[in-house]
Each structure stands twice: as C-alpha cells, then as structure tokens.
Length: 58
Image (tube, rainbow, N blue to C red; front, side, top):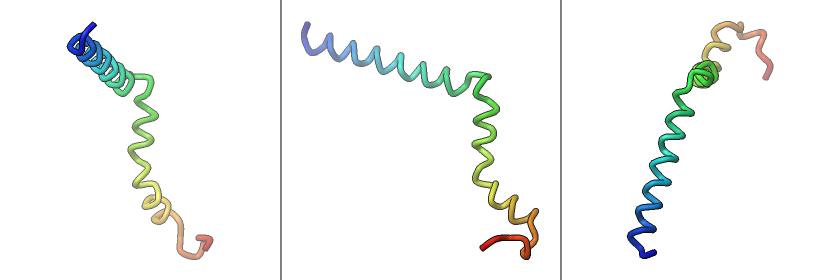
C-alpha cells in the first residue's frame, strides 16, 4: 500500500462522511428541529415586543 492508495481511501471516507452529513441535515424528521433553531435569533425580539416594559425583570 503506497501513499496514493492512502489518499484514495481518505477521499472515499471524506465523500461518505459528507454524504452522511447532507442526508442527516435534509432528512424530514429533523425539519421541525431545524426550523425552530432557525427562529432563535428572533426569539428575543419577539419576547420584547410581546412583553410590556413594566413586566420585564432586570
């Protein structure tokens, strides 16, 4: 086994890992979790508009 065989094996493992991550990210059972996570930057903004200034704790 020379260096070129090792490089080919690493390339194959990398491609399989990339495919696995893409499959996991776009699977339908993770959709609701990722949609909820996508709204996190706006959560603080939403809370501040729905809560009056006197009700907030400091």
